[in-house]
Image (cartoon, rainbow, N blue to C red; front, side, top):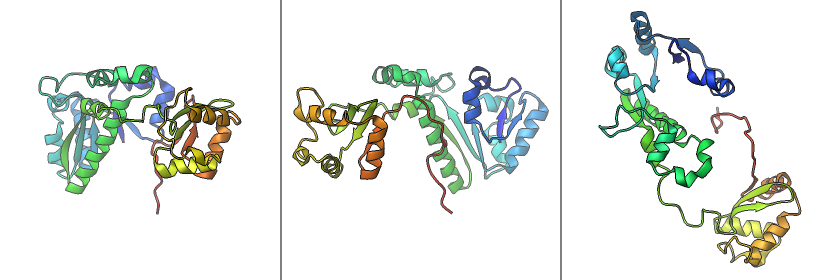
Length: 262
């Protein structure tokens, strides 16, 4: 059950296609928590719920009289998860969005223009909210706050060596049409790639530079230019090589990247 205020969802007005994709299959109900009837309806729903996920600024629900203490008094097994912005007391009730959380984490210079396409704090925060909810379900209820500022800082650690595209085993290559990404970091995966390409002489060259002055890099580029990216993608699936075509458009698919087994 998805609850929205009388003014609706801003995303539905500004990006209706994205809104429809994100909310497909969800039941939505309009509730006005500024009215007694709306608050009573929320308490009634909370009495039957297992998990409540809330994303108002901290203090808003308490001010309306339907905060975690009230709702958990109505249902002591309720798992109340609040997605907040900041843990720090001076910022705890401050508004924010993905852009400001990434800015505070020092991520914008590292992401470059990619910040426009990837909501890292939001998506990471959603995973942390799920973890909190699962912990609450195991514990028989509870109140949790997840901080999007901290969710952004998960990605702000020092860069890992050789994962920056500077080595031949882990970089992006041009093909006949399009590009392919090779991620043969582990020795057995690099060996598999070398043998599949019939180039065993590369076996000890995995971490050599991905630059034009490296003959191995030049040779890989030359070989990969014989097929287009999608053909190499198909070849990689058959040979179990960690290589995939670089796609430049959104491909709709399931939001949950796992399959439930009966």
